[in-house]
Length: 468
Image 1 (cartoon, rainbow, N blue to C red):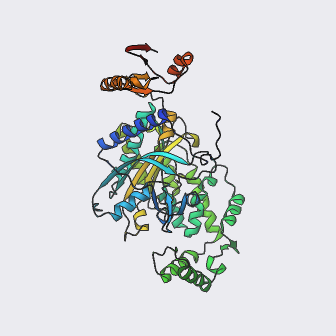
Image 2 (image 1 turned 30 degrees about the vertical axis):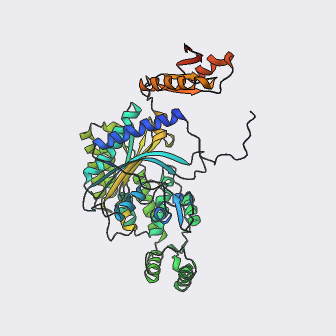
Image 3 (image 1 turned 90 degrees about the horizontal axis):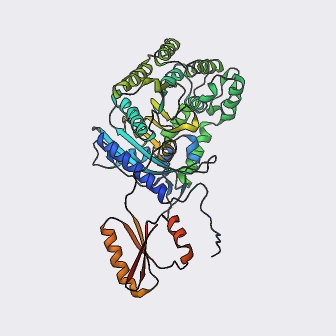
């Protein structure tokens, strides 16, 4: 038969076959068994959610990468691009969960993001979330569990880079940079590396929308009057039924003005940039690294974030983790915008983006962005299961069952063929009736290709069993 296909599969999605599915099933079982033994309950939020759920505290990049569309009711929905927001929504919404309790969840499934660089727009993900606990011991536990499970699969020690965004926030707060400027700095933190160029950075700031004139940044309210912003809000509220309004117009307007009215001098802005650059370029062992950062920020911060980071990392030794596999990275900023303090990444062999397969951190303010009156302590990690498997040397348990096929060319023998199938299945073997195969010359070749252990050919009352 000539193959012809005029409808191809969607870009970035691949068909999955038996061997791949078997690996993922094995990985899922291993992970859920592992997490259950540590006291985590498996959950599975829906694959489709209201798009606003993922836009409240998401990174700018991922908003444009959402698979979003209107459902039949007209609601703007998205395929989940991550689990954390869905789990937080579930915890807030469902009365069965007591927010004063320590809630522990595990999950396993697919997430969907449009990726323009790779040819893969979905990820098989395993992860853990702890909600309701702010004790730093849980921060250490989250890192440790991601490490220990990854080690089981890899057959070797993974590498961990650990940071605390709180240190960066403390520095930016000291220099009184605006929220908009803070967003720009976090978005471009990698530009502050060893090859930092102030002129190029200033160009990036201008492209982002930061304008310095006569030594001070021009506030947005100087670009757009309060009256004009008011008109835009009126138009959206009155004419756009999909306009998502969680506050009244006056509070939205006041918040916009507050955020946009902070003027930062160019000198202060780049003084902040210089301190950030010094901090994130420190690459030393844990003790020396903490000491050097402490010296840099001694007049800037109370060092609580730095002290917390040190204690979290040192406590990893209690889990039997070799600290030589742990690196402090003060410039680590994960893609999603909801992380508030601890952040970490997982690698294999080297700290290279190609070897990155997972990570996580703490996101205490996500619950508040979804409607709670105050912050809700929460943290977690996620692992790209397929990527982790690609790095591992894992050999799936050998299946001892035989694959036995009964060749049937005469319907009169159907009853006999089915009886043999039932007998073989009762022995734990795979067995089915094949009715289409006609070419006896290629019989053995076909059987080997399909990994068949034994062929049974019915010829009247005779039964011909052939081992392959």
